[in-house]
Length: 271
Image (tube, rainbow, N blue to C red; front, side, top):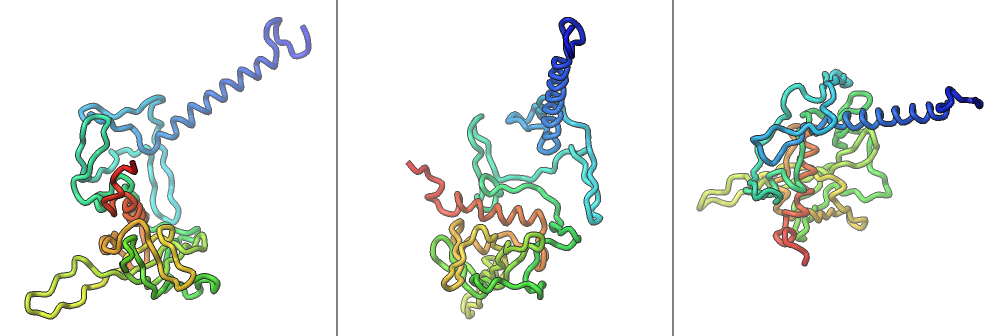
């Protein structure tokens, strides 16, 4: 037998090749099963049938210890995934779901959001990652960049939807993340007949920086996803000085949904 031969029909090269095949198959199997820690078992259109775990089966639960005393998280979840009521109606199998309410506020389609923790994202040191500049005396905008504070915010209709009053910074990746916009509260009570019309109460909402375009000439801000009237319905944060992971999802989803739902013509086919 030649060098490396184990028997007359098997040599070391064959054994190494077979070992690699077994290792590679095991790796693909393990990775595919690990992807099922979130979002499984799959839901079916027919609600009377159980969810589909698919192949391979669900992985065993694994518990992760979160930093900064935020507890633990186990996936797959030992209890059913939390659900929220959606203003949707189902059509025929294979057809998309249709909204039954104001599509800008239903949280579906391009404006969909997921249930996330009601806690702020934290830095490595355990501080809220995103904070307004009024709480950051050592931070400032670069002198070469336009300062949008005090400037109007225009919707896609060209009308003023609010005024920028502050900027929110990302402390982990030093950059501008949100603009704080003061808008008229659409839910403010109207004046009684015969009384003088009082100015609408103001509230503050956040505008993600990636949905805005700041003019280098005068610092004014333009938003293409929503109109001026939609600013009054932007989800607000529970705290005036921090934003939770859940609120980030909802606020960003609202502006994203405007690219389809803000104008009637956007929901029509191009051809």
